[in-house]
Length: 65
Image (cartoon, rainbow, N blue to C red; front, side):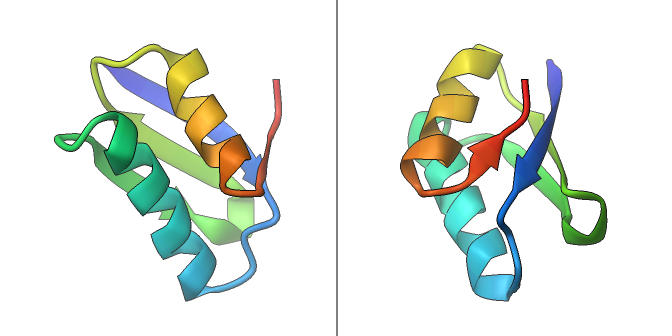
């Protein structure tokens, strides 16, 4: 299932890698695409949106509701 998340606070490639790694701790098979300019993260994962958003938040980024 595809999830679209609005993530604020990503400013560089390091931020993108941190978000990808956080998501892949929840689902190692997750496919992640990031559009930093649009604050958009698309995730193909069977995990619930809430679990994915929590992983990003724990990494220090804000996920819009």
